Length: 455
Image 1 (tube, rainbow, N blue to C red):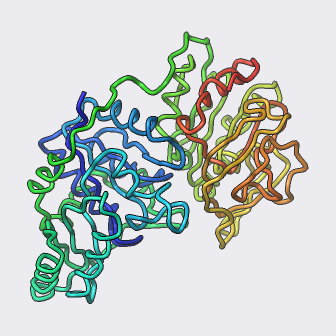
Image 2: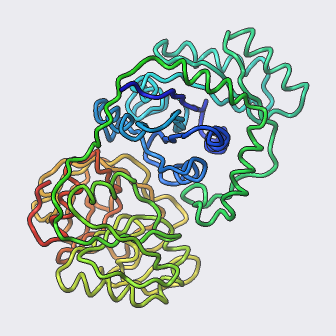
Image 3: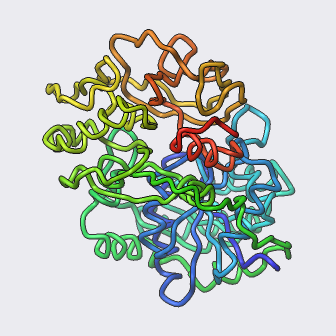
């Protein structure tokens, strides 16, 4: 079938207000349309805001993780019942993995899905110079169609008139919206915006974001989205569906554990697992299960609450000691450690690994990751892995191993290794994506059932 109308909201750089603007646009469009949100790149928090605006899970489109066919398949399947698709970009429009290439960039995603681009420009103290910015973006890659501009951080009517006239008369691109300088900012912490769980009243927050884009021409944006080139988009699910394996995988989802790709959970179900979610930070017990998959998030912020939930922590250790699968990514791995040290407090955790996860002031890892599964890896032996990492913690002392991954690109736990293992438990700083590493879901489900990897 034909892909729905679609539009990319890109930035001239980081920090220009893309997330708030894109979310406000999605929220306003959602009053009348079924809107499917997307985020370019490996991001967990921005899609939470999209989901709050649209009532649908937001999806990540990442050309480092996925080849063009996989990405277009995901786009087609996830937007099959949507009226319009809105894609929020990452960093600047053309910024990607390398200095001059397209991989990992918003521009490449726009070309993959044949979508027009609306460029968000921080016009603070700029008028004619804003036109220079826009003109440079227009000319750099003729295959990227910049169909409109949103000028952010304007100081008033006079500034607005000058900047709009300069951009439209000197670049030939229309200004579809302007936004005055805001005194308030969305709340942030070390990994970015705070999660929706902690941002307060979601309805009130969406109203604030809609107010932010009140001078953006939403009807014109919908017209631009409808001008996207025709594109055939498959609607079949991107997962190979297996028979029921009789395996239950428990997944904590709350303030501490909130960094999950929607596709990972869907991949587990497609591989034959029953996925059950629970909220250990709010005191909920560990459900009856065969395995636990713990994503990242902010366990260091809520360590005291987690420490008091001994049923959860002792249950994790019992499953591990009994040879069951406990698989933790980043924050999930921190909870598998003996203790977490953060904000002047040491909190006791599950103790699967004899190490302390220590929060640091400096970023320890921010990169796309390439790794290879070691022979000892009970889920991904010998496999080439693409993933990403973003962490402000380290393990002290470094566990002696064994380790499941040799890190070819990135930081990992340290010393070019990642994936510390004990029995059939694994903790890693890598966030894998099920469509980047085909067979990820099957490998986890087979390990949960005690079987060999088929990754």
